[in-house]
Amino acid sequence: MTAPIKGLALAPVELTRLPTVSLHGPVDDGMLAMWISALAAARVGEGTLVLELSTTGGDADVGRRIADDVRLFQRQTGRRALFLGRATVYSAGATIMAGFAAPDRWLSVGTSLMIHGRKLSKCLNMDGPLRSERAKVEALLAEIDEGLVLERAGFLQLVEGSKLTIEQCELNTAGDWYLTADEALAQGLIGGIL
Image (cartoon, rainbow, N blue to C red; front, side, top):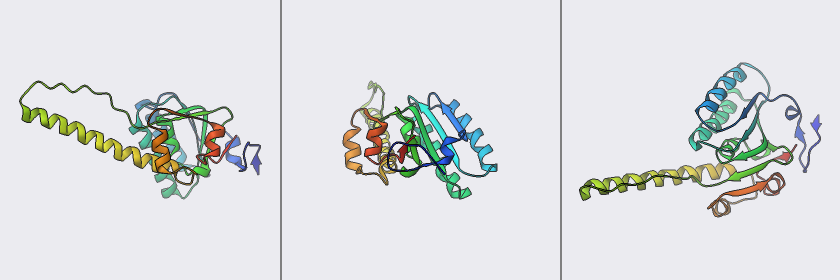
């Protein structure tokens, strides 16, 4: 049984029912707490996990945690997980979406995605002995390097199974990259539009 959709794929019927978990708002510690509670309840249930998400973004590392929870849920339970993005799926929301296989990612009509690289906002105050100042610079460079490693890993998850290469993704995300649901479908980033 399938639902009416836009695109070539047939929507899983689970997407026409109430979602297992519905998250709305900033991707932050509050959202993570709601997610952990809802996921614990879903683990004792049966059937497909459906995460409905609408967000303008937030903490990338909270997004990574939720995406990793999805991976672990599927591995530990053997159950399918579906993503349904509603209205806006920006920034850390796209990080969460990347935790689902491309065919299991769906957007509602009119939803927009925004994807970008990891960002850093930091002032480096240098007012001391050169050795200690060098240590500050090296620590900042290490933070940037680790951020770039995490960014690439997230982009690899996002483009897996799509028409995009990692290089195209990195090029497009030098700034904020906005995509309509139709554009995301054309790139193979999602399974369909509901």
